[in-house]
Structures are given as C-alpha cells and as structure tokens.
Amino acid sequence: MYSACGTARSQTISNAATTWAAVPGSEVQAVLSGRATGDAPRQPGTRITSTAPRLVTSLHVTSKGAHYFEERPGAAARPGTVDVVLPDLHLRLATDSGVFSPGRLDPGTRVLLESVPPPPQEGDLLDLGCGYGPIALTMASRAPGATVWAVDVNRRSIELCERNARAAGLDKVRSVHVDDVPPEVRFSAIWSNPAIRIGKPALHAMLARWLDRLAPGGTAYLVVQKHLGSDSLQRWLGGQGWATTREASRSAYRVLRVAAREPGAARDTADDVSAGGAANNEER
Ligand SMILES: C[S@@+](CC[C@H](N)C(=O)[O-])C[C@H]1O[C@@H](n2cnc3c(N)ncnc32)[C@H](O)[C@@H]1O
Image 1 (cartoon, rainbow, N blue to C red):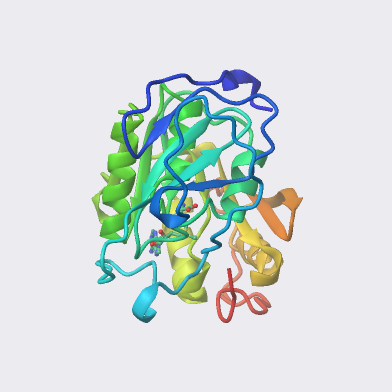
Image 2 (image 1 turned 60 degrees about the horizontal axis):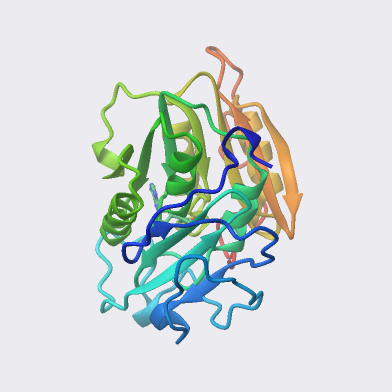
C-alpha cells in the first residue's frame, strides 16, 4: 500500500517500544501484550495469529472518571504495551493509564494509518493529539527525512510518545506540549485522530489553530467516526474555507482530507453549521 516506504523495518527489540520485521500475511488487527492482556511479551519474529484482542479499551474516560485529555492525569501508573501492526511496519509502543486507548490501537487510528497516502518526505509534519504516539511514529517511519511534531495537552502522553520515539530510533520526532511548537513552523501535512470529546467549540478552535499552520499546498487528514459527526465536521471545515473531501470511509470511520486554506477564502460566520451531535455526546 505504501510503496514509497513499504519495506518492512527490521530492528532489534530493545524494550517497550520497537519495530521489528513485518510478518507477511499477518491478519492481525492489533495485538495486546504485557500487563494489559496478560500475554507474555512478544519476541521479534513471533508469528502473530490472534485477531481478537481480549481487552477492548478505547474509552474517553479513564479510571476515576478522569479524561484522557487532562493535562496531568492523576490515574496511578499502569504501564502496558500496544503492538501497532500495519502493512508496512510494526511498532511496539509503551502505554499507560490516563492516556487515550492504552489497551489497543484505536480502530479509527488504524483506519487513518491504512488510508492516508505517504507523507511528504521532508519538512515539518504534525500529529495533532499524539497520545502515546502511534500516528507520529508511523509518520516518522514513513518519512524518515521529515521532522514530525507530536503535540498534545496531556503530559503523560507527551512523555510516552517521546520515550516510544527514542526507543524506536526515530530521532526526528519532537514530542511537545501544544504551546511549545515554535510559531514560525509550518506543516506540509497534518495527520490526526482529533479529540472529539473536548466539545465542539474547543474542537473547532483546536482545528482552526493548527489547520492555519498548514504550508501552502499542505494537506491534513483527520479520522472521525461517522456517528460522532464526521459529515457535519466536513461541512463546518468547508464553510470555514478549508476545502474538505472524504478520502476514505471504512468501518463507520471517515477520513477527511483537508486542504490548506487559500488566503481570502470565504468563511461562514456561524460556527455551528448544522453540526448535529458532533463532539457533544459521542462515544468512541
Ligand atoms: C482521540 S486521541 C488520539 C491519540 C493518538 N493520536 C491515537 O491515535 O491513539 C486525541 C488526543 O488529543 C489530545 N488533545 C486533547 N485536546 C487537545 C488539544 N487542545 N490540542 C492537542 N491535543 C489535544 C488528547 O489528550 C488525546 O491524546
């Protein structure tokens, strides 16, 4: 699928986060390992046969009612790992409580990573809302010459992403708080599984903030569940001057392709363009 960078990566497993040789023909969707599932940690080259992760945790509310987008999650540490198995790469990533989807690769994130075209091979790229890093590290693996900015508000996520990038040898990943990206940086691509749960006004503000930092000709890809308002978000984006089309549609997820806004593009003044249930009562 990703012919430009589709070679399997082969590195030595070091610890929690790593890449190793792809298993041709593996049907695995996402494999849990370590404490999260009770599985023994997998070794490099292990044939992965399970297609049924036993622990399904893609919750927006973490233990004790906290949200995954809190700046400093109070949940007690509960380290685990998630194996991200894609057609072109495998990553073993460290996770923890208090971050988004710590038990498995989120299905929406998978749809995004299996749908997007290869990223630009140089310049600055952005993973908006990096969590423990599956999108940022995939971008960096597919574009080794580019600098990948992995931003989040959740400090635990930022630390995990940083640790995972280092362990995988992806030293061009910059895991930082959203307020710590130098203002002059412009992105030739943005990939995101955006934090719908923060609510529509905050979601719109977050997207506007970062989409306006797309370089001319740059493109963003956003994955959103259909029943969480992907169509209304598409309309809102279009109404704000970001030409938006549907790149892919799979398993109730939509991948939206958003083009950089042209200077002087017409914008709706109303923020709410029949946004339906988007970002209000959605479930992941
Ligand atoms: C749906 S999760 C996706 C996480 C990760 N990219 C993945 O695919 O597993 C959205 C992420 O956005 C982060 N987030 C919430 N508000 C944000 C904001 N204002 N700016 C950037 N990231 C934010 C959350 O903390 C969370 O990690």
